[in-house]
Image (cartoon, rainbow, N blue to C red):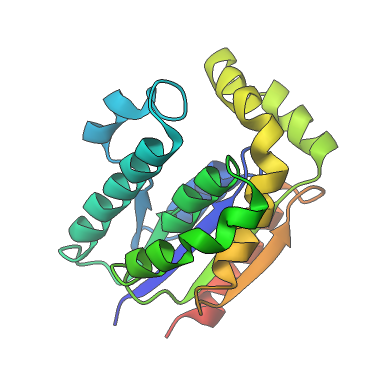
Length: 196
């Protein structure tokens, strides 16, 4: 039986570090990244040149492409680096909160394409630590993260709004004061507990 877990969270919460650590810990883990390589060339247009709705459907198309590929994967432990939830949370952070309910029917339709998810782990970090972590990144990564910084709190709120309308078990984990290995050990143990 395949086990699917999603790692969600805002920028600079430690998702990439965690996923690399999990892969090093267990070679049988397959990681599905949020944007396929052949989609990357168009990513720079999202939420800049393209409209918010067009940007949302770009990310959803990328998600669906990855989901199709998961069906042919022969590994039993699959980690998704972000998901449809992130795609919708970015969009919701750009529209008034009063309009969030209007998107739920589309969101729930897209959830039907997802495999059965064991659990979602949502990484969190306080704003002071987030800024310190961003400063440690490359210039290009800093530019990308800082461009989104004004939306991060709304994306966090939207992420919880979405998971609470998904019927998928989730857990929030604050990584602000945890060392890298502590986060990796914590999630690795939780995944082993939550496997079927």
